Structures are given as C-alpha cells and as structure tokens.
Length: 336
Image (cartoon, rainbow, N blue to C red):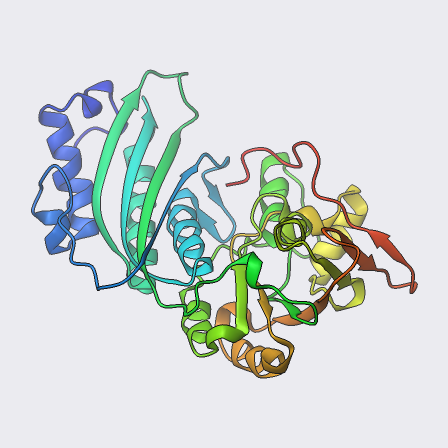
C-alpha cells in the first residue's frame, strides 16, 4: 500500500478497505477460517462447555517497553480464558483507528498480534475495522472476543474456595503499571521497568493437572493484586490474609513506587495469575509453576480463613495486620 497513513476511506468498505484487509490483515492472520472471508467465522468446537470473553483495549501509549496494544489485546483475552479454566482456541478482533494513524504502526501492531496468538495456540478468525475522523479517537482502540473450551473439572469458582486454602501469585507484581506510568510521564529510573505483558496459556496447562485442587484463578489487571483478592474474599464469603514479606515485587518496582508514593499492590499487571489452591497441592503446584518462563517468580503469599468474612488482611513486615481495602477511584487511567 502506498498510503503512509490511515485515511477515512480505509473504513469505507470500498477499494481501500479491501486493500487494508488483503495487504495487512490477511497475511498476518493467515488461517483457513479467516481466509474464507465470510461475514462470520464458522468454527469447530469440541464437545462440552466453552468459555467466552470480550475486552477492549485503549492503552496509551500504544507502544511501551515489553509490548504494544496488539500484544496486550491478545494476552489480555487469552489470560481471561485461562482464568476461567479454558484452553483458548479462537479470537475475533475489531479496530477503531483514528484518521492519520501511521500505516507502518498498524502493520507492527497486527504482526505483534499474529505472533502472540500463534505462540498461545489461538486462531484469529474474524475482524472488523472502523476509521473515525482525526480527533475523534486517540490513535487506535482494539476490541476482542475470545472463545475457549473448558478443561477445568470442576469449573473454577470463588464459591469453591475453602478455609485453609493457599494463595499463589505467579510472579512479581506492578511491572506493567509502573512501565506505563514511566513511559507516559517521561520518568527515568536507574533500573528501567518492562511490562510483564504475557500470555499465560502455559499456566493454564499446568493447572489442568491439579483438578479439583484448583479452586479459582484470576488475572490481577486493573486494580492490581489487592483488588482481585478483595473480589475473591467478597465472592467466597471468607477472609484472605496476605503476608507482605512474601509478595514478590522486583527491587526496581519497590524503589520506584516508594519514591512516587504509589502502592504496588494496586498497580496493574498483564502477565500474572492469582491462584487459590487446596493446601495439600500448593507446594507441588508452586514447583511446577517455577519451571515455566511466565511464572519463574511464583510465590505463596497467603491463605484463606473463615473470619472476618469478606475481608482481606495484610500482615505487614512489622508483624502487625491491617485491612487491605479494594481500590477506590482511578489509580492510573488507560492502563490496558
């Protein structure tokens, strides 16, 4: 394509729209389902239950250390399916692009999506593109829908959490939130922080081996670890205690957040999973997680107690305990 930037005509449905599809999206998606070019995707699904999720991505900036909006859109959707106990299979994508957006940047984003989906074993099977006038959007937004087949038996649910269960987080927290904040505000630290943006399909495969011992999984994105743990405490009607000294936080994030006066427990993550597991399986699961790249820094960080119901307590480094509330207000907008 000779055009260097996206024009309104690229969203018209006419000749330029067809060129955008044939020269940008089709070569990247490159699978028989998408290449059929129907009005929808015709899918073969295994027997049994499926999980379906949808998400929208409006992050700014669209390129950041460790990823871009394209990689993020695939990882975020894959990870939601994994948290449901599903093996991700198919995704659709829809783009809202601002007039004037660089075509080279779009090609980079699309290629990133294709590579990330391929690594996760996911087929991109349908899509849509809309172009809006300059000033009506901020560069590019992406919406996704994901479908996966449920492999967890029984299905993961907060209602399955029991007193005595153990809380595991799959690695260091706060990296994504700090990376975006630093990029957006032009902050420079002695040790640069990279987003943890990653597909967690390998964690899903590991969890399949633990059957009913896995109670529930959640990815701590907006609102961070503290908010997800509060959600699980409320939904289960039980209490969760976290031990501050056990929560994995990289020295770079710990130092930078202390300097900035922000709490890493509320920072967004895009490549971490919270897992609540039966106590008898926790040590073995932790060993298995540490053998995989996305979860080498996994740690047991707390446990479930019967009281006080619906509350989260944080045992501090000083030995005291305090209530760890859910996030109030907006911590950092447009983080994903």
